Amino acid sequence: MSAPTQTRPDVDTRPEGTETTSDDTPKMFHYVRKDKIVESAVMGNMVVALCGEVFPVTKSAKPGSPVCPDCKKIYERMKA
Image (cartoon, rainbow, N blue to C red; front, top):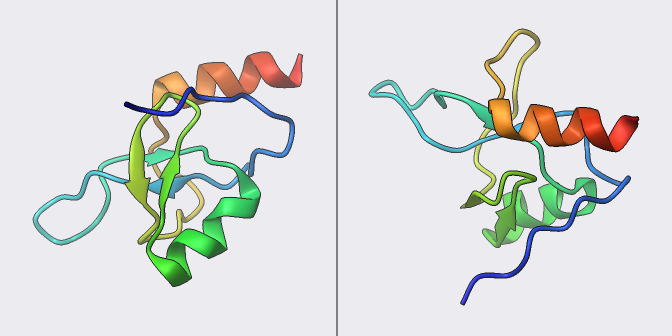
């Protein structure tokens, strides 16, 4: 049973990565709740992205990194 995705205003504008390429670089990054990023990175807990993807935080995005289009759409609607 998966937890429902919550869209909340405390979502970090810095996306975090999931799927990786052969050189361990994430293919795209997802938006996740800000308060869960450090906890996941330190403890290895899973996080739920705005799009519903579930993963542990392992990488930080750099400016210009590709962002999950579903997360981006949801985030833009939250700001409106």
